[in-house]
Image 1 (tube, rainbow, N blue to C red):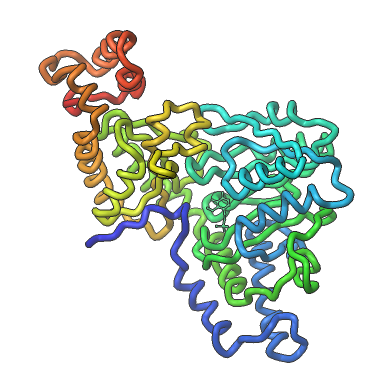
Image 2 (tube, helix red, strand yellow):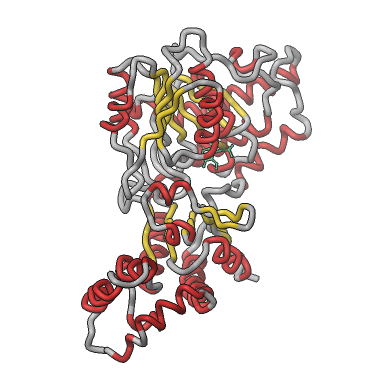
Length: 435
Ligand SMILES: Cc1ncc(COP(=O)(O)O)c(C=O)c1O
């Protein structure tokens, strides 16, 4: 079967050049980077070369780069590290309500430990208002943690503006840049952040390697304590092969930013426009422009995200849904819910995420399969059937143009159920397809 991988926000394939760079460090170059003999020194040189490459990509000083096990550890180290430092300004953190679980779950944990957390809401495009962040600052605020690009919808936050506010109030700023690095230019100086998290497996390096950028002078208590690795900021023998791979992946990411902004964005737009125009009752989630070039997140009304993910998988297409089945009930994504979408739209959201390896042929195949799968799932949906019965066969009214159709549906639906009114709101209801 043809296999199409459109889940590059979950993880990416290791680039062949990355694998090639790593191979010697699994065999003949097996030294411990802390050993003083030649084996060790060769490993140390490889680690430091990779550190330089990561620093180049982020426009940081190599001394500001700390290798971790991934994005989760980097987020945890940044947030706990600031709060638990003896000189922390206070016990208050400001974040948003659409952060990755690596941040949200940690914040919930911190609340249990007596810290205060403010979750600033985002607007219907997933954007946070810097003014709302500023309003949440108190004399107790030690840290602001706002992600750079959201992992479900791709919306890019105004980090530089938030950094300016943080600086004015003498509060540290952390950003989770796991989903922006390798998609758009990420420059720690332009962003003005104190801390930044990165993950290797989102940029064609292996899983289990990440980076925490720590701006020079930032006071941070290490999460992991042990040997003096990483200048005593992260204990544990360095994962030399993965670090070398990450270094190579960063070089490639810099080379391919143009590809992401050009070819990948064009493919993403082709997919997005194709689905929105051919499948009725669909809504785009996320900001139309302020978005990473490889993500499109679409809600399909009358379709459950998990069912659609499985159905697409049976056709060889790998995508993600933010909703998950827990104890028999479908739990909507916290990100789509934060956009104030109706619960059924939140439950029917699908994320398609591309990479530089995505081809036009794959997008064309997906554009052919998605409408078929949606139609089949909707035919099985009792809610969809109810709406079809309620509205009747609109193809009997060929002169009724779409705008009129949606407004007349809207008028009729205002006295009907909430589900029928969302048909009108989605606005893409084509009479032909409402059968
Ligand atoms: C925005 C964001 N932050 C953090 C993480 C966690 O990274 P890792 O899988 O490397 O722990 C992810 C992974 O999905 C992510 O998308």
